Image 1 (spheres, protein in one colour):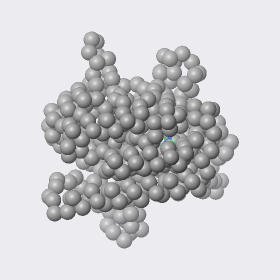
Image 2 (cartoon, rainbow, N blue to C red; image 1 turned 30 degrees about the vertical axis):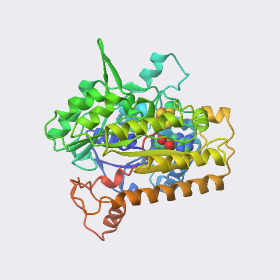
Image 3 (cartoon, protein in one colour; image 1 turned 90 degrees about the horizontal axis):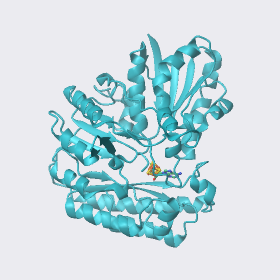
Length: 436
Ligand code: 5AD
Ligand code: SF4
């Protein structure tokens, strides 16, 4: 048995990829361990959505330099979005790294690790860039990694992610995802349903469908096109399954059919994460989001009309190129009017090679970004607090997901006992949501 340590940052898609990588490597005689020092193979599953996430990986890698010097046989790999984004640059900045594997090449990991172990030197496998071939070649080079699920490898036994599609074709100007995760490619409904059925048979109560823009899901099946709403109706019939969620949604694809499905299907959670990104139509235009602030508000009205008990959450970017105080105030207004259940707020971070990087200047000073971020967060916290008051005294069904991150840290330090189901959870920390 060889020992594997995997560190995961980024969105739910990375959490799922890590689960699948661990399951795949377990079938190749690896067992997971809790600390890099104990491992023969150390993998970092990385995120490129903001620069900060990438810098953190380099600083974590830096801490392994000495370990590698003392134990040259240990294999160190960078996988996921930053591997695809930086490619050879990873070797330049961290020369002791042995492996660089993009998210579309994860199926090759066992073989690549073996090559390194056999002394064949550094290995790199990445997919084609969005302009590096014809459409078919590019599509094929980004492979969905969907090996059979290993129930033991899930962060909790009761919940699981199921992928509906990989990649993204929206090309919002600030976003790196379409370059690193490639073109949008849907999994077949048969595969999605079979996987869900299998998970339910193994005790899974809650499934979260995952796609960068999950509600854009389209699968052409002969004459008919299967959409997300159709998948929800079919999943609803699966015995044992109690709750179905889906993330992340793109505002323009929030169709009435989908909203009706959420309203009519009791297992579908009325929780909708629909990132607005900004409340200013001018900023949305520069972001190339494809909708106006007015259209987003109309979508909110439709959601509230059709699903009165719904909870909508959002992602918002502050300090995008050229964002004036007036434009930022429109985002404040949007948050105040929509009363999101929760908002994930981010300071704009330039991503090399994106349209925004080519077309605009990152001209909002960092202290202004920080102030806008803090103000918006304070407003959102106040709204969430007020909303939560309405739950005092009510009885609700809840699914206990496991220990919080703080409790897990305590568990690792030995101050609270580790419970069933949390053994592997510590490796699956998800810092941010999917981009959409
Ligand atoms: N800078 C800041 N935030 C970004 N996001 C995506 N790209 C960037 C960027 N370049 C945010 C979006 C997305 C979330 C996951 O990350 O709000 O929805
Ligand atoms: Fe696609 Fe979402 Fe990125 Fe836009 S923000 S390009 S929809 S992943």
